[in-house]
Length: 218
Image 1 (spheres, rainbow, N blue to C red):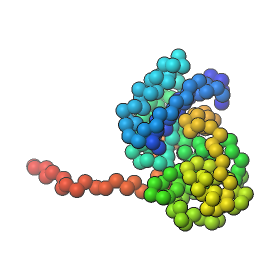
Image 2 (spheres, rainbow, N blue to C red):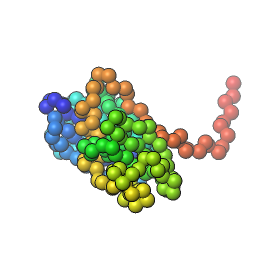
Image 3 (cartoon, one colour):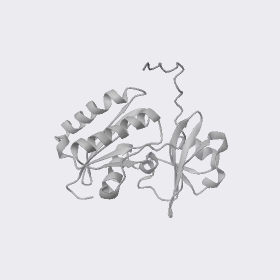
Image 4 (cartoon, one colour):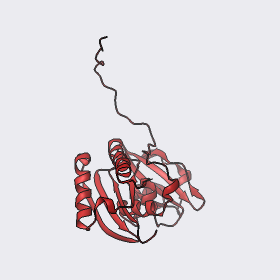
């Protein structure tokens, strides 16, 4: 990462608003606010406060990093849409980073990253020395045996529970989630990076409206 890069990263894929501001290799500011709902209303005021506190304005930014999930479907859409809008308005790149990547940043491989899938389930992705495996969803009572061993490390949601069930070793993330997203985004080739897009390991579970759509008269 060059010293003149100034990257703002944020994530609302879980029950929080998390943001960080990275200049070169230095974290200028970082904030996490726990909240189950209200991220859409809180995100931009929090980002404004973060930038203002660091003496930075929006035009100073050179890049945006955003958490693309998996996690809460609505929260993911809030962040991804916000990042795309900022990238267009500021004419700077926006880089999507999975929460799996953020959890595993700086930790030795192989490692499994875990994210809350609700209902006693986990989103899991294995990072080996040869690369990342495809993410999957698993029940707590049916964890895939081939993903874990006594020498396997697990990081993220439910890591202690998974370790107790499988014999793997639980460990803590090396960086706060928004800081990790900023670091990963800053290291990416922005010129060839695709636009941020939600990472859905399973299909959205929003129910269709119960009421019949209104009839449009000719």
